[in-house]
Image (cartoon, rainbow, N blue to C red; front, side, top):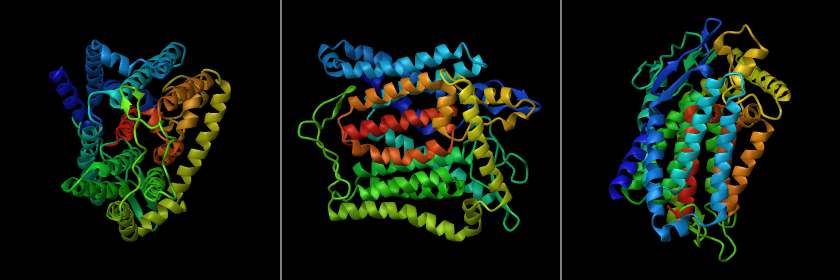
Length: 463
């Protein structure tokens, strides 16, 4: 058993560290009207294989632990536990069945496979044998190489391609590259890191910054110095993505983070006897979140938040023309970007009205768009830039009802004060409302599983 747990732990650390790298075995690339249809590509990511290995070993570990009667009674005796697991399985089963009746079955099956993996990994991170603090370290350490890469990409205005690392080459003067452009500043390439788009890179960095803030609570001595240095590096790389949604996510997250340091403003408590720590998937008694900080502790955390703000202020001053162009939307490039997004919302509503009950199927939004607007090049077919809207269009009202079942059953499983969810929700809202990758891409689904799983494990276990 000990050897099995060690194997699971090392594979988990490797998975979290390598998650940013998009190494993929391409099974099929598709082209529409002479251009690659990105969202019709079929493939298996290297970290996806690692994820399934972890899930299978987790199942073996869990079955072995169930042989102990005491553990079985403590971990899986409550109906709330079974209800939550059942809700996840029902949603995955619905996605699988729906895949047989959609326009592109292969893409739908691929999306369902990733949903199932994400669901199982969430359960693993939430209740598995890997300590949340160690997993958080692996997750944020994995952000160091890609942060350095992203900073280099922006400062050098160059990228490199690598099949092994899953990197693509983007040239600032060629169509298709994500840039900031105007007549006064010329064309500037945004930082991609190891991802397919700067916005995805920005979202990843925002979530690793939140994870670093969570890890900082339990770190001491040099551990805090290292976390602080990593946050500065992450913030620098995030700035060079010029991702509006990620900027907003970090801004709102920091506001809640700072407010939570002052108990009169943000007091987290529960009625006596209702707080608890997690045992398996269930909860037992625990003290409320420790936000009553001493002056020294509060000052240290305020300095941590200030370092993020300070980094953004310094770079905003140094690159003010780019910031102004990106956020005032006066250049032709930014106007076109916003116009296309608004048009995408209208197209999504039209598609939903045609398939309101069951949707068009997981991963099939661009296929449905292709049927509605034939004749366009493959790159033109993009998911609508809003996860809630994309979700309801792809899975329909039935899928929405099943997701509500998942969320309600999970919330009923928790005993932490609802106000403990504020940081999580506040930081996630801009990423959900202003982009699509958290639902449309493999790495987005994995980020949801990892971040949510580690967040709630650490909240329940007081990392």
